[in-house]
Length: 121
Image (cartoon, rainbow, N blue to C red; front, side, top):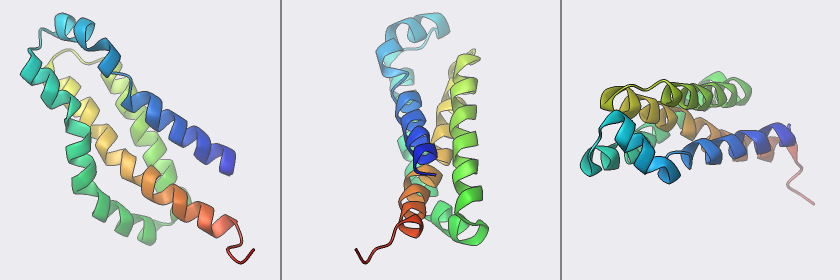
């Protein structure tokens, strides 16, 4: 379980940090200005903040395994959608999907670890 969570966090970091090194080529191919690209880069933190509290409630309601799995699926979906983005809207949506899945990983993983290891050692 610990290795699976480590891989989830690794995927979280790799997908989150995938666009910034490629700003130039992505902007050119999709014909995006600096403001548009800046809003794309800011999409996931904005959505992440807005969905963090509901994600915590959903984790409590549906359980850790389902919630963390949903987070992994949403983060993977974000990566795939980024690869097929054709304009500003599709790229913005792809990055925003990451913001929906991110809280399930960053909130669910520590909670899951706390249930796996004895706290009284």
